[in-house]
Amino acid sequence: MKPFQKYLNNSPFLNELLETYLELRRHLQDLGFSESELDNPPQYTFKMMSLQEKFQNQFNSLTRFIIDYGFDVTKEEVQDYIMPLLLKINELTPLRDGDTERRDKGDEDS
Image 1 (cartoon, rainbow, N blue to C red):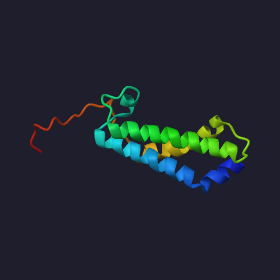
Image 2 (image 1 turned 180 degrees about the horizontal axis):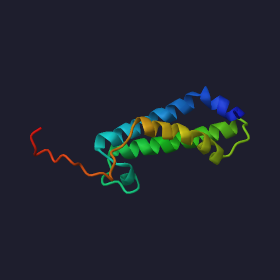
Image 3 (image 1 turned 135 degrees about the horizontal axis):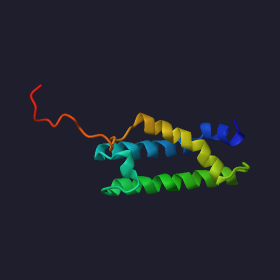
C-alpha cells in the first residue's frame, strides 16, 4: 500500500467523498435509473446535479490536499485508488437493469 493510500484510509476526506457518492447512487435508485441511462439521463433533478457537483468538488479538493500535503502522486493515481471503492458502492446500490423487460405485466391473477 502506498503512503497516500494509507493516509486516505484514515482521512475524513475520503469518507465524505464516499458518503456523497452513496447518497447520489441512492437518489438515482429512487428515480428508477438504469446503468445505461447514466450516460444520457432521461431527467435531471436539482439534488442529482448538486450531489454530482459536490462529489466533483470533494474529489478535486481531496486530490489537491494530498498533493499539497507532499505526497508524490498524480490525480490519476488517486482516481485509480478510489475507483474500486466507488465500484463497490455500485454493487451495494444497484440501479435498475434497463436491458430487461418485465415478464409479469401485472394483469394476471397469481
